[in-house]
Amino acid sequence: MMGERAGSQDRLFYEFCLEDRIPADHFLRKIDAVLDLSWLRAELAPYYSHTGCPSVDPELLIRMLLVGYCCSIRSERRLCQEVALNLAYRWFCRLGLEDRVPDHSTFSVNRHGRFRNSDILRTVFEEVVFGCMKAGLVGGEGFAVDASVIEADASRFARIKGAEVDWSEEQLAQRAVREFVEALESDNPPLNPDQKPKAMSPTDPCAAWTVRGRHKVMFGYSLNYLMDMENAVVLDVEATPTRISMEVDATETMIERTERRFGLKPDRIAGDVAYGTGEMLGWLVDHEITPHIPVWDQTAVAADGIYSRAEFSYDGERDLYICPGGKELKTSGTVHDGTTLKYIAKRSDCGACPLKPHCTTSRERRVQRDVNQEARDYVHSLMGTDEYWDSAINRKQIERLFGEAKRHLSMTRLRLRGLTGARDEFLLTATVQNLKRLAKHVIRPPPGPIMA
Image (tube, rainbow, N blue to C red):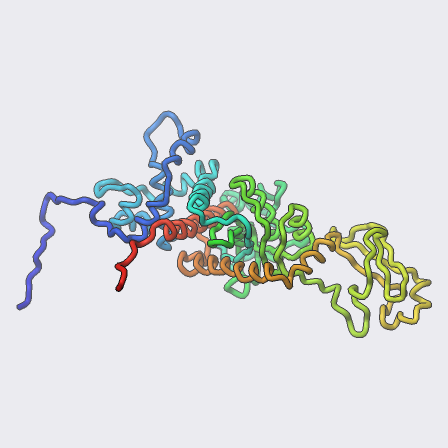
């Protein structure tokens, strides 16, 4: 027999408990169990006025942002609509059925004001990292570093050629353009001083013109992660324009900040060949961190029938090279391009040498040496060890973090502009990823029945 609709929507009063409507295994319950924001109001108190109308609770805004990044809701306008309709979102945000959801414009006002002035998003991220440390998820011995390109909120079809731009008053009124112009005069400018960009975006000039993204060419930012290899916990995150030199520089910043904030200094760090520069390796060795990073030394590769640098022995005490014929190659001590020393043989030695056809086609032989060559040689000697290969395998976890961010958290294209906008989005993404790992570790399902 066909049944009829049993319920109705004309009741005036309902007996309703929001807590009872959220399933016990809902993922937001698990995240809420490991998320502590009780300190937030005291942290932000100096950034609020003592007079005037009461503002929106900052914890509500942070919780709503975390819901958005957990559930891939990138639009704040849509996020407000979803929180108004979804009971689980309301419960997580501590909103009752009759409580009003903030307007989407509230997020912009707070983001460009007190949130960035207080750097509260980084503080939230660091508190989650502290939670991971207390739960035993962070080993603190082996770190991994890498970067992934995220498309900026800038059309690749609208670009300005070159780096010299005469910004109009209308363009300078845009926050991202004004941020870029102010950063040019700072100690850490967004442009590479050695190589000017081929193109710039008129709407987000901090973004770098790159061929490394999902499109053939596009404007992008690099999502830089410093990860603990024990349980793939993100220890630090940094946003940079997509330039390899800036990604490498960000590594030093993240390592120093991790030691300063958490007291963690790794015994070893793993990375890909992009981080195998002499400057980077020298910095790591000086800080007593063992680099498990591939070293690509093109100068050690022999040309057609010509001796490579490996055929020359280096005398560290006298700082000179000795060629296969027993002659000395000396240096003036001048550092070229900031990284290279040149060792040159005497023309008289090379002119009378019977090995010259196998050594050089010039009048004298020259050998280049990196100022950090000792560190490069040391790292190269580690590449065949078991510890190195273990790090190479565990380092791949960071690629899964990037895949999770792009596939499950929709971090394929930024919604905010400017370097600060990219930093906000990357911090929230890393915070959510750490919260998921912490919740999975702490909230374990009860053991099943033991089968006889």
